[in-house]
Picture 1 (cartoon, rainbow, N blue to C red):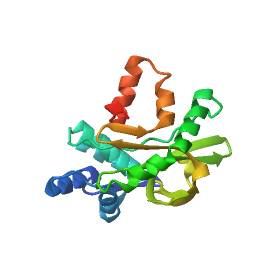
Picture 2: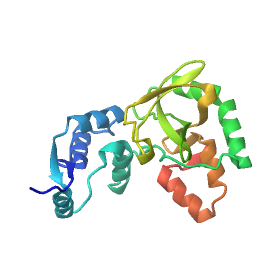
Picture 3: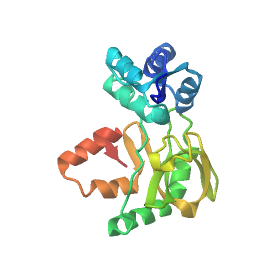
Length: 225
């Protein structure tokens, strides 16, 4: 018997399921719908070599179930599906001692009341407010974006929508109750208009014009509010 590690493979491919359901719906799938479809999809355990062979025969790699929202939005962009939705931000390691980053943290905290107003005034399905917080790890601090699922006058409940390797004790859907003091940054990418995202702006300011354009394209941002 082979002792090769078994890996989960969606049958049919998860990306094919999402395309089919979105076509029938006639509008972009919401975050909750993507997660539900992933959790209900049929999975077969296969040896990795067989899974790789299947991916080669399909001609594409399927969506990573641990980062399915982000990967799905990247696939939608490649297929030119409109409207183009915010994929969320990848985990970032940041030099928090940098003066411009310290100013970004301060600006983000000062503008939290405005963030709350934006959240409470919007009821669109595709609205995807994010907060960034710090996870203290053995090898340094990791700054992670969480999806806001609830907000109060003093804090937020954030949900993991992607899981980096260093957070192996957590999984997609884990929630964290955070006071305002724990919020490093916030952002809303609403139809290409970036609200907040102060740490992103600070990082962007260090890039040349071509790098800025690539970052904006990656984030789906057309202008900064």
